Image (tube, rainbow, N blue to C red; front, side):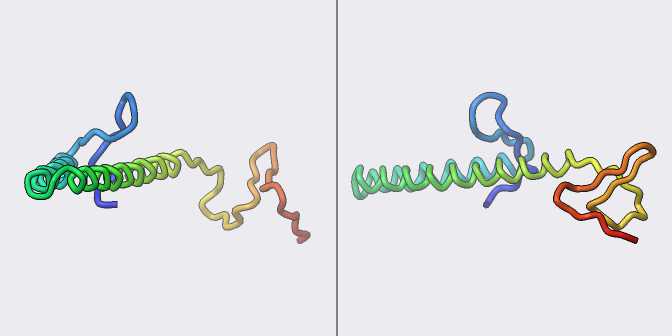
Length: 113
């Protein structure tokens, strides 16, 4: 992944990203130059087949990078939604006790003291 999730926000409609920082805009500009400049040079020097191959491969890499950035954004959103009901002193992660309930993670066995 070349871009960082902090540089973008997901598009409101459709699939993709919208730059929100100057780094995101630079990233977008670099991709634009990396796709169009070689495409035009290949069209001028070699012809259409190589230029089209470059453009298709470049767009595929760009889509993959956007996919990785969106996946990283989604992972960060999931981490923010975690809510723990536990005292700071408690070390066991499979058992939670409240005033009225004692809960434990399904599949764990209750240990005898």
